[in-house]
Length: 461
Ligand code: ADP
Image (cartoon, rainbow, N blue to C red; front, side):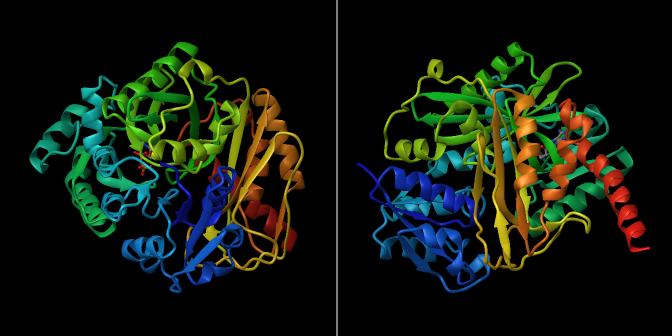
């Protein structure tokens, strides 16, 4: 069976990204959008649009029934959820299947198994994949308290249903534990309607390294790893592929363990197996798996010369993987920076508004995945990611100088963006030497922002 009409139930740059691959496959693209997104780039690129009229995500991009209805009304035969919104929603994947439609992603049982963080950890243990020392999944409160003593401090309390950097709290000592656990539970109930918790040893100076995989239910292949250690509030803002800090034998072991984990659940679709890497003792630990396409997927596409969205679509219709592991190689380095409509000098406060003009960088090795255009009014209701700048070079040095060059060409007028931060970062020694870890950016930002504010004050005087 082939997909003729694909409904895309997400927005922004990823909706445009999916449209591009689907069109190349000769598929008619349908975008279901909110009222304010009527003028979006995705709505302009799509062959067919379906307006849900409302603005709020709960009534649009999170409205399962309305999206399925849109698919039926437009005679779609498949749905691509992108990332965020309903992409890892078990109930939605189940409803899509029940409506006789193809869900571009794993089946709902796999999303359930791997999407629940504590259950995924147990699956990893069973597959022989190393995990962070911790409570090995969710336990009752008394058990958690006694295990905390064994793990030692600092440690992290994590919500089983957490995601997007939320549902994680740091505990420095035994005396803080009971109170922080209660607080974490209250927050988890409010955010995820689920207060199951587990504990993990806090790895200081960890690197966040993740492996891109594709599975067809029988075979799994990997597309090497990405280093996503440059984070603010546990959210990635700058990503690279490959991770230059990894010794070759560790890279192989990590990628093989990701394949082993995905194979153990007969994984079908695109997925990411996330690890923390402790550089001091060259150990890596599984932390979670994402059962969808990720924001940072383009850097893996760039170095491996593969279109992951096309592969996802082919797998969803039951085609076997077109690629064999021995055919997947890389001899390049790619860097992605996330351009958000935010004011970096004002605590990254979102600043939606009208884009007056844009100059996209061009030239060899430059890719832009965007969801905006000149004259576009960014609606205030959704995530602030507006575009991604992706550069590729023969090696890291070339990619970095290409990024610096591309940033001098890039301008987005009318709103504040994270571009000035990337210009500063690309000239920073720690970035240039790739010696960052997950807590590095937060500390660096404090100093950088103070210096920027001093500069502004001086100019004002
Ligand atoms: P989410 O699902 O919210 O993205 P993750 O479990 O993937 O949560 O963790 C997000 C980030 O939090 C990681 O990239 C890392 O920076 C930090 N982190 C998570 N677990 C640990 C740990 N055990 N020790 C140190 N940092 C951690």
